[in-house]
Image (cartoon, rainbow, N blue to C red; front, side, top):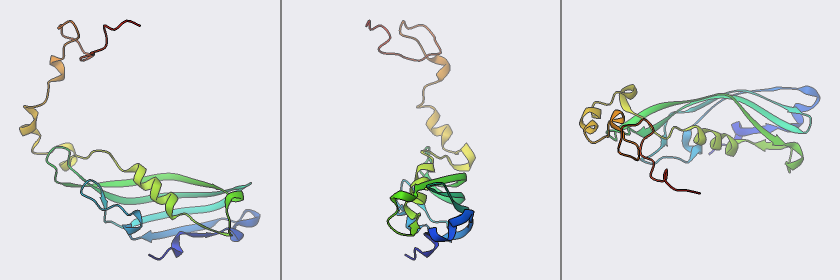
Length: 161
């Protein structure tokens, strides 16, 4: 994989200079392509990089798309991943060379932003009605005394400290 687009040349940022970043990457750098989470749409980034005192600042807007299984029917769902105003910060003192490759920091930020669950058709999975008979009705919740209550079952409520 070509890492040229991930490189920041620190010497270009002296004296308050700001470098613009505008790149599109193949999602293969995310190294995430499983049934539970996959990225197949290009990762587009736009932003800038600069130094502030002893820190390298990378300010980006990131867009891509994750594919997750629907939590109801298990069919693939495309979910937009849109990171606005993402800041990546790296200490200049810890850098061993005048080039910083931000690929790993970007990968981590994108993977952390991936949703845990998705539902097809914008939250209206057609299989929901089939599954609903197996789900408890929250209005029928009872407290520990068997009386209706809105706090749900709390198995340790009667324990004394």
